[in-house]
Image (tube, rainbow, N blue to C red; front, side):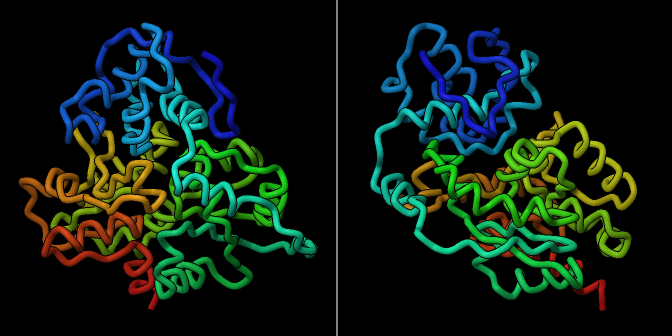
Length: 327
């Protein structure tokens, strides 16, 4: 089966390397909810090994949340997220995909010279939906910082919709001109590191929780919810980053026994496209089960909204915590 290479998915190995060890199965939030192996990374790989076509995998491909939990545990080093994104490129258009494709058509707008910034924020749709928190994040970045737009780039990567080169030509130059790129959309961390290999790129949550004043403000009665996509995209470094945080502050983290991050917010393709409503009750319940905490701190807006909706615990975003300590 031909697979189109996409900029965010350099193949380390493909589905043919899957040995059927099933280590990816228990970390998959879709499998935890459905208990259906066909919805798991291993199920997709085995189906492809036995000659399945994309038409046979439509439901499995659409339900994947691209949380990234499967990749760090795969002993065969298969690019499982890249595989899903590439196969989604061969799916027939839904109304949401067709609308996204239309939005990505380049407009005939004169280009302005690229300005250089000390730091630039890539907020993503979540942080942009909360203007007060976006403002706090920009303030924390300091004087000379700015933010960039084009949430459709992230959505197109996840849904397999082709990104016109002209869109990237507009999106990437302001980022390459900045000294520091801070990314609030964890799904963009790996693609940006592919597109801009020399750039200094930091996930927003990991960057803020590294600040001494932020670390000092959390403790054993807090539950700190890591951005799963940013964490899994840089697993070897991030697992040590958050291990030190837990050892130093005693804070509880959304990590399982394999140190894989469990999402509170898990959106499938149709939910990301706005075609079906969100339903994160099972994910939040799984995440909070058995925990005794007084406060939840999240790195993503999506997790903040999901936990607020499905629990009575006080929930704040990492930018709020950082801003409180800055005063």
